[in-house]
Amino acid sequence: MKDLKKYTIIGIIFVLITGTLAHFLYDWTKNNPIVGLFTPVNESIWEHMKLLFFPMLLYSLIMILKLRQKYSCITSALCFGILVGAFLIPIFYYTYTSILSKNVFVLDISTFILSIVIAFLLSYRLTRSCRLESYTLLLCILVCILFACFLVFTYHPPNATIFHDPTISSTAPI
Image (cartoon, rainbow, N blue to C red; front, side, top):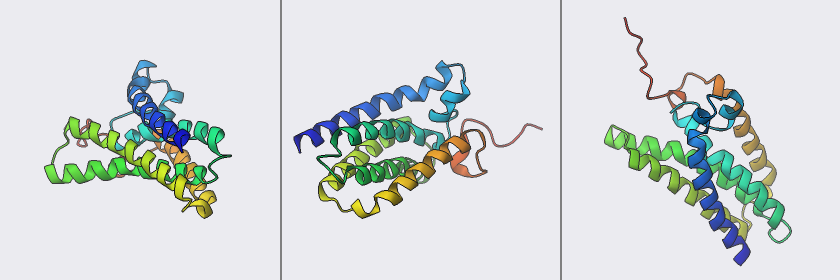
């Protein structure tokens, strides 16, 4: 269990760092469209879900390769963690902004950090308990669907609030 705990703590730190750097990568690469598939291209909540999703997916693949022999339930647990973590971002954001009627930068950062920590702690506990092992295929498919949605909706977002960039005015000047 020590190795699982170590990988979990390293994973939290890895996603915190790479997710934070990913926030700026699209601008740093002068709006490279390939980079934009995996990093936020605007300030929408949907795009900010990528900050957790892609770094955690990458780290999860490493964890699975290293630990799957010892922990047979790690794939289902990490897939569940990725999904929960990604969707906690809009849940926390819309909850606090509906209460405060505005967004607060410190709470945005806290949302990101808390989502990562919860995602990895859930993954850790579920790896140990094996409660989701029978759902491994379903959870992997759901992660793949979300992956595909990120790729498609980056440049072709549906007309829904979660995809709107709040820094761009929704009303055109007359």
